[in-house]
Length: 58
Image (tube, rainbow, N blue to C red; front, side, top):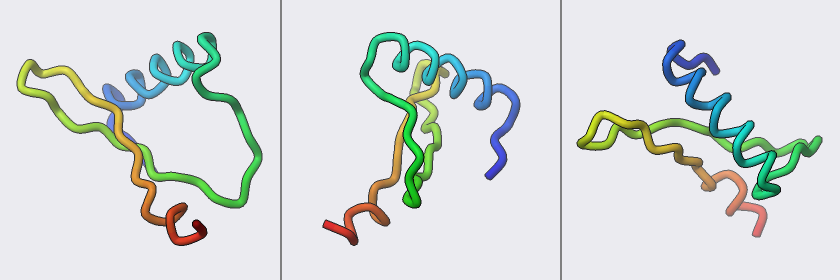
């Protein structure tokens, strides 16, 4: 799905930072999680993932 340009930039930063630290890794999986941002009171964006689909397999 599409994200606004500002949110896409934030997503790229989030992925680059967390891939470099080893917190996340690239996978090829038939299951993908929704990724979105929630605005914080200070105007920054908080990254979130929706695990409801994955939880149905647990």
